[in-house]
Length: 634
Image (cartoon, rainbow, N blue to C red; front, top):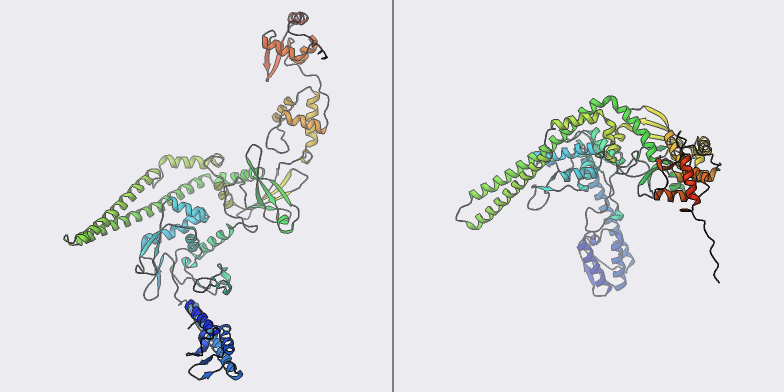
């Protein structure tokens, strides 16, 4: 009886219960010390037998656990048995390890491989299985994320062939839908690079569960901690260098302070690339929603805040930095526009060829299954209708599957033919020669822009001064070159702007010239001045707030609307006629005052004769009446 197995454990517990109830007089057995795999259970049995007077007998003799000498002898036997089991286990494990170091230890092989009866590992003889495995690695190198790879395979209805390992269908090929864990297992497995590996995982005894053989396994260990790694021992789908690039990409996709993380759909294009120039830590991305509902990204260095509870080191607006880096990248790509167009066309052609190859293999397999079902139906005796009806039904099902697959293939070809058309090739050439238009096109997603930036840039180091709007930017290219520049960032206070004194002086100057707040805002926008936040242009409300906060000046006389002497601003005409401006607006609505619009403002037209008429109109009190005081109620 073994204490490691569930049944042995239950039997041992029942035996202890019978002894505790004083229902047992003697326990007979062979190798009594093997009742359990540890001395804990053995000594528990001895304690109960000594307390209730139960004897223990084996092939060597009869023992009374209540006697000191017999209990000492039984304890020694249990200790020696446990030591024997430990020695046997160590010898077996060492033999297993030595066999693995020679590359002779047999292990289950993943999809894409088969083990022959002689023990040799070979590539799967099925072409479609091998093509799907190669497609997984090539698409991951192109897309760069497991989630993107999964979406691509699901969109094109790609299935992964798996050989059954147990049961009556041993060795049969079954096609499964791809899922995340399956793709990660394929991308992480070094056998696809031709390496024989042993010891990629450890077993944690604390996490083991009785009756479950695979429980207690730890996550995958780094390559330097593998017990055995023999390169070039097995047929390979990819090279070892490509395998290392894939592992580095998978590790970099993990979100954290040490890595760039995977490409996401946020608007911050330099996600994972921006490094703080003060503390040399990677800056994270935060999105802030504005009042109008739009979200604006920010690069924030919060390492000190998260790790030590300190203050945030620095931060800046994402659009300002993204615009500067994007201009540098587009300028660097401009000389290679022809090469870019040829490379894009070639890549699109190759991708469509790979997908078409997968479709052809699926069609060939469906055709074979239908023909095989037909041969089985033709081979049966016509009189044996019990079997013939079943085979006829299977044949019909295979034909329906083949027909549905053909229809899906033709729809896919109409939507995306194998070869690029002349219009598609011309569009690729035009877009490659006009990279800014392609970059800003609605069809280009933020994830696409980020993928391009990550191919060209290694990191972007920014030096942010809290009391200044200027940011020092150092762009480190993938080839080792470095470009230094400066950019303006949005700030929250006017004093942080370098030219804020000149801006205030310009506003006061325009104010003294007689311009209204709205006209001052228009003049500043036309002259190229920017607001501290850089999100919107100057407006009348902002100008009034700045004049109130930083000191206003009396507005000078308003300049005439034009060189014509008979044109008046309504305020000037009201002072000339000694009447309220609101009354002039009433005259305009009634048609009593000629006027026209200049830059959105109303201008009255009045010569000497018209002024005399307006005075007579005012004196007759037709439209203007003085406000009478209200009588107090009794």
